[in-house]
Amino acid sequence: MKKLFSVLLTFILCTAFLTGCGTVKTSVPPVSDQPVTLSVFAAASLTESLSEIAALYKEKAPAVTLTFNFDSSGKLQTQIENGAEADLFVSAAQKQMDALEDGYIDAGTRRDLLINKVVLIVPQDSTKGITSFEDCLTDKVSLMALGNADVPVGQYSEEIFKYLNGWDMIQKKASLGSNVKEVLSQVESGSVDCGVVYSTDAATAKAVTVAAEAPEGSHSPVVYPAAVLKSSVNAEAARAFLDYLSSPEAVAVFEQTGFEVVK
View 1 (spheres, rainbow, N blue to C red):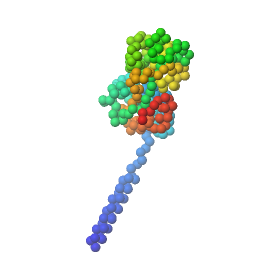
View 2 (view 1 turned 180 degrees about the horizontal axis):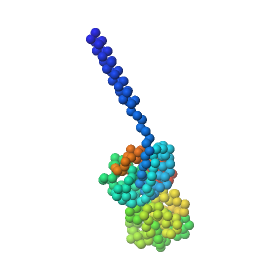
View 3 (view 1 turned 120 degrees about the vertical axis):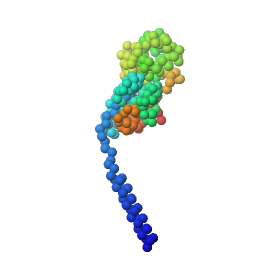
View 4 (view 1 turned 135 degrees about the vertical axis):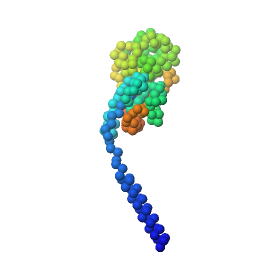
């Protein structure tokens, strides 16, 4: 009898426990899609690709509105340091992200996202015969467009011409742009003989020709890191969008624009 009572008591207690657990599970409401606006600070060279990806993401997350601030990574870094409201930062170089490592970015979210190339471009109707970076050190080039010292493409340019032992000469020929799109614009308009941009910018331009890729080993790898900012008030949504940037749909857009995706 005692044994039977013990078995029955155990059964009743287990049933009550399982029922209670089931009640807890079913009482948790589903996560609702609350309207969210994400501010994304991104390198100017990402303008075309991220604008296209934003349209795709709207179909996946209709409650999320993406706003972009496209500019040079150095300028964006300064804005973030000065308290600009942003949720996500995508830089065209490691230097600017490294500078924000302490105090500004959620280090746990930082990842290397994309790889780009540095190229020399000329106006489409150029008759200067410029076919290499070395040509920039000759009389073929009187004026060339470069990013300034705060712009990653300008920093890569400096590395390249120092590698070619011609940086001092190039500085005397330089017309500086505050971001890579300004450099591209100068070449498109024909106001300079050539310019140094990323291959992705050249791919989206209609009035320029790629004259040469930067010599192998002449500059640091062009890697684009991305991270959620500590100050983000929408960190969960920012992490979700950052994850989406590695999705097959986003990768297809990046690759179509000319980026290589970090595996």
